[in-house]
Image 1 (cartoon, rainbow, N blue to C red):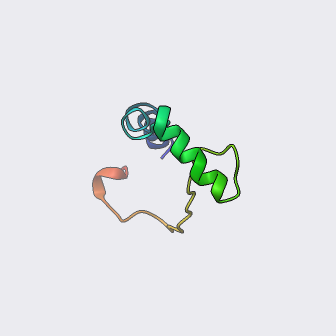
Image 2 (image 1 turned 45 degrees about the vertical axis):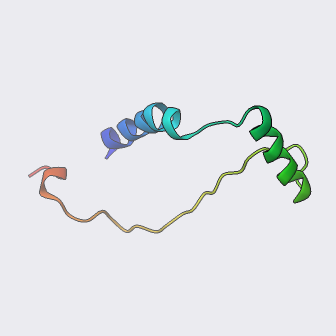
Length: 67
């Protein structure tokens, strides 16, 4: 599990982040700031959603566990 976690974090911080996470600039940035200002959050430009889902354990797969 420890090796998987480190590989997952490397992937998330590298490939995934570069491809899917984009900080708005120019008109998109201003439009985003305007929306958050109207909602009562002046100076904000984005938000994140942290959802926690209980997962007792992953489904069994023989290749993931040593014999």
